[in-house]
Image (cartoon, rainbow, N blue to C red; front, side):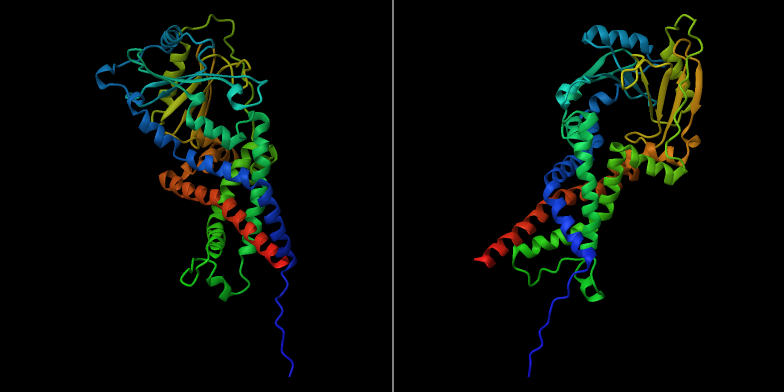
Length: 401
């Protein structure tokens, strides 16, 4: 009587190529995925940590609070004289909470530099009591842990313009790895499915099996959140990704850009109280918002001359999703346009919310905790995956001998 030989069923074409792509991409970009995931995970609780460390300068002493703060132009001159920095003050963030200090920023970039430390010429945050003009503290953000972590996460400490692609390409490959990982995880039948959702280590003694389960089970649970994090990440890097989001959400490839508004009162002498007029109007229009930011040097982020004074008003502390935009004449301080959050279309609202979605802050503290755990798991995946490959390689080597 002949013995029946049980042959293993051959893997489907999809699973076969998924396994190859998962391995090849994992070995090629695993280290970058590890670095980007770890730096992003630590960055998640940046606001909570900084607010605790800087609580003494975030708020002013109750006895110093007056009915009206010192004019912004006066504060600006006082800071410039006391600190004697080379460049001009770039911007100021003003809280609507009267108990909080103003945040003045010095920021300048070197376009010719190739790395973070050379590119950022100056990045200093000055906390000021707006009622008596006292400089509460000055933080050199250039060498602070969180801006450095952000640069590692965004561009591996390389120049922002092209460093984002050094990170962006591995993230695209990581997205493919997540998809192929789900395909490889997907069980053939109900019986096989039972062992894919949890750890069953009662009879498991080898670390290799436990490592495999960690990669397999945790990888599945984190894959869907990791896809959201990754897609919102490459949204910043690639215009075509942004265009896909825009078209899906609003039927147009590009978000409508504001028309360049020239200040009509250019023939007038500049009003010295122009910044205070804009601040007063911002407080009046958005009394329930958190804070607003305005440029002080008359230039945008790219260093180009502004034709007006744009003021961004933020709805909540530590979030960017809800924000409105005001435009003022840079000579007279008259309001030229008020574009509230409610007036934005779906694609524009998503563009404002993308950062919050990427960091988890869009979903509050609960979202940050989930994102933090997901980040830790994503950080572990290249390590557990590499150990699986290493174990298989050694096993093949033993068989050959």
